[in-house]
Image (cartoon, rainbow over all chains, first blue to last red; front, side, top):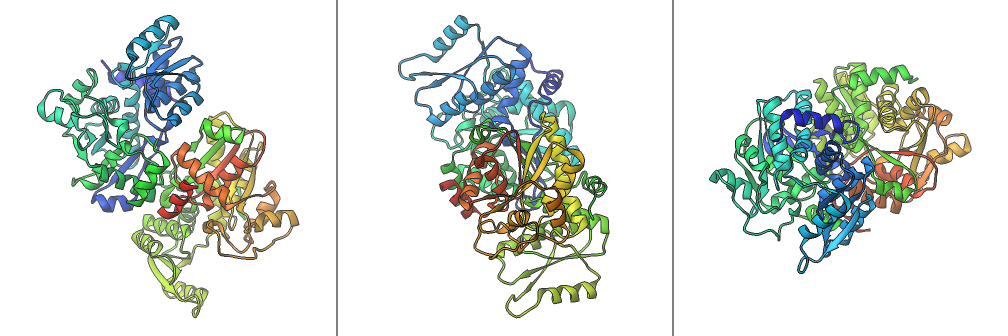
Length: 315
Length: 315
């Protein structure tokens, strides 16, 4: 179970290795939202997403001889770079139909990429066999206490940076997939900022967490593909993350894909940062949902291809 | 004459008001350049460019009752926001054919915008009359000691942030128009980083400073329009900035517009920041000109319209 002490230990491990990403704002965004908006620009983190924090913390805390992960996205790059910085090997298992650019990027960060056929092969079997053969430790994308603690360091920084801006009471909107970032931030806020509350943010049609919060029990998504917010689509909240979210989160926010694209374009115009669609849902909720008082939106990642950004800028 | 003491005084005035912009890097950019590349992301500064630093410092140091400036670009926004933060009025004089979005943005930051007809009116006469009538102080875009000192705080941060990354020897490439940022950074490096040298960077066809350095005397640009790098096009280096640049700068760098657009696209891909064409010339030189050892490129501004970014991402 992740505690505030674990998050603070993670912050010490990450010091000098992870970037302290800036908390940005613009009077133009405040005007659109009708209240002060702050953006925690985690798209500027190493590898372009918050995933580096959890991966680096887990790798540092567990000190394995080598790591393995299943991912074709931001988690893969976070694990690969963390392993390289720690001087240990990493193996990333991806489906063979993953985009070539994602395979190349992960290899370029020093990982050995092993491809499997989704139709005929069992990735868990491949992973277990490799882990046993080579003595590798599995780094999960969210449902792992040290990963949650690493993501929670984002929350500690939000509290400190908001205080520097004179803000102690705020809603904190966080893009939510499996819930690692959301639960980590919720724990940090609960311990350090009684005036701040975490709200998960999801795209319409993939709002398992918002529905789980309403139902009081884990709900699943009916579909797992077909969203431009692919980076934050998971079947359901995690076994470790869900109890934290249920205990600490405010009502879940849900936005449309169109709103996420508009938020990307406004972040381009007014903050000069690049946010991927899934990473922009929290800013979209901050800008386009009514509310009172300051709102802090986490821009959780910036790994978007050029064509998608052109689409966002053309809407 | 700007001194390191003035730059340090500027840093104290800016503390808590200007953003300490991050020094970013990516292993993918290192690979393209064949050496370590760092990017000082001044496009993330308030109003989207370094101009806020010089404007805020001048307004704070001179403590006028109101300010006036001639600009339709980044300087206008820097002065307007600085004045608003200091609680004094600002008047910005722009040509009546300035883009509506620039007029609107400057007004939104609290400035009174006064338009003049380039063909029939004399902007200096208008400015002098208004300044006298209302007791306003002129804030020049670069040729003013307190403005240079404010821009120089970028150099102090570069030295500190490079040291955190283990770098003490580096070339420092700076986009150069009138030379306020270049001369300020050169002074800071000269005083605080004997292993770092400032190099101005300009677009091909508008390389007055590079040619001035070669000739040992001020040279003028033959043209003043027709560049996508419009933010850094000036007739010639300033009377205050030129002697500093001549004394402290290494050879000037020159890049093509095509290279600036490519640098914008790579900054999008790998750093997730938005840079305007003129602000991207230093990164272009870092990526596409051979050299040894670390290079630090200042990304001086990010105020680019959506259509230009779409063009950069489509090249």
